[in-house]
Length: 251
Image 1 (cartoon, rainbow, N blue to C red):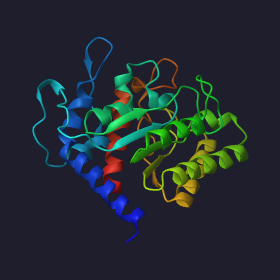
Image 2 (spheres, rainbow, N blue to C red):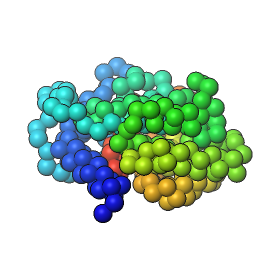
Image 3 (cartoon, rainbow, N blue to C red):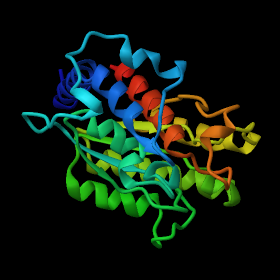
Image 4 (cartoon, one colour):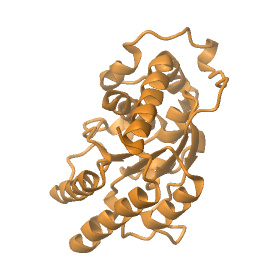
């Protein structure tokens, strides 16, 4: 077995183990996040898989006990959905997952950013990828973005492949999880499917894990902010639960 394959198996064991052990903690942690006037968050049935495994009793009041040993270095690359736009940074969905596991998480996501779209910080996903490489992560999470809907489709496809290839070339031992683009509570445009196809194609080309979690916020306007683009904290917990379950199921 090649070193790359051995490392991927080790990372898979770490992911599966940490998600199994922390399943109940994830459920408690994300349900304890509040938004507005002390309203508690409850995860819908989409996240039931997280609580379906045996796990140690979670600490009271949703507190998350620090892990005794540091886990793998994890980097998130994405847009405002991933960085928790207009909510507490601790409510961003990667942070919710990271807080319930022993991941050493760095969330590089930035508002307005995409594979081609330039974010509020002046960068794209490629710029985030360069930062990610410097951290030498064992796991990279990257998601397609609706911010690229206004960009040239051919350029988006090309840049998606370029960024994904860069991550694989620079991080040959890392596990890369690529996600479909998130949408709100309404029916997504057909063009969003093209963005998903781009990242799927790139994932297959670079041996990344493509996770299609669908649209967990569909038909739930109460999970959206006033702009009908960004989720409220409740919506982010739904996304966190869906992504965590998908990663665990990926093995």
